[in-house]
Length: 474
Image 1 (cartoon, helix red, strand yellow):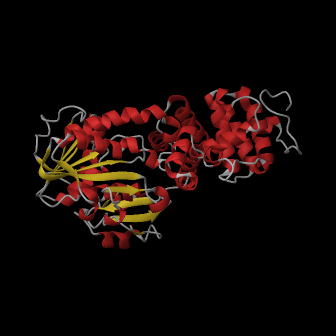
Image 2 (tube, one colour):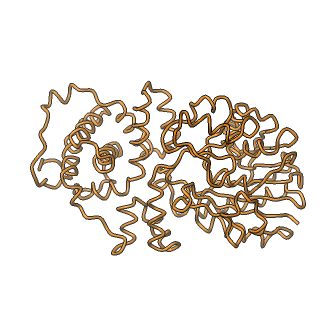
Image 3 (tube, helix red, strand yellow):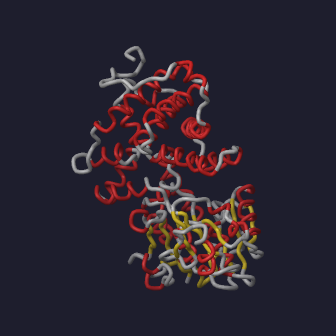
């Protein structure tokens, strides 16, 4: 092992090895190999983990337990990448980032199984070697084998930075955040609150759905679903929401196929609760795809209302149309439009009673649901997105009728994408004002702050991080 490049001499008693011919004759576990290929593409090409995972599972013939295991391997490795890199760094002479992406990914995937999933070390090491060989990197099998064997023997003795002595190091190396996010959260929230938020972002999010009030009631749906989801319970705030637990696939349930519910996080549901669309109203959703909020609005305005969903991409609008058909929502229309430009041709000025601007954002409130986002984002993305958000809010506000309400929301936490956007808008647009917290709908009133903003946080509310505010046109 001393001849393996990049590996420090290993201390302690070596693990027993299988004979080379025996190892070579065994096929790799298909589930682990699928996870390896997905993670490698996420790292090398910046692919979106959820889209790639769903597409890969759809093409595979894996059974339910294997599909769940593949999902855990992909999301778990991405959530804990920062901690895994720290521990692997103690077992390598070279920088992990300088290894080719496939080899670095194989080490992380194996390390996740050893450190976080508590898989038997011998199985995790052996399967990692088989996978890297099957993926065409025979030359790296010795390195993968040696590093993971050492990690299995020593990881419990490797000290991690503590929150008391090294807050930044703790958030980076123990709680798996990139340095810039860790530093930002410590500055904004303080070490203890930042650590609580980081821990929540590493948890598996709850499976939350929204009952389609056009076809059923929450109570009736809940009674039906408890047969298949024993943990199902009504959401604390969202009036149509149900939490099913943290495991399972609601999108294959018969009630989903019948259009009786939509999979949607509670915080996302509460954005529509803040908008509070009424039966018969005209509502515009300017950044609608994939359609969770647009369909929720359509369910509330009913057959006498009108919902117009806009998006820049025709293919993404197809997702909205498909959801509307499944939910039997006939009053939801879709148009292709770039909301950073004039909307006069598709959304006449002062035509809509309510407008929703669920703006494209950095997504820092959804890291537990989209763990790859923390490694894809860069600090400069926040300022770039803020320019887009200001432009969209400006264009969308022109479509709001006098006396109407516009809700601006993001699934992120930075002030630059929330408070600062609203401050800039109000300074440039006379005749608009923030709806006071005391005037907010009862559904969301307990989550409102004195400044009129609704703020949902994963570590306080066990839902995605969302910020939303209502603006009224006088």
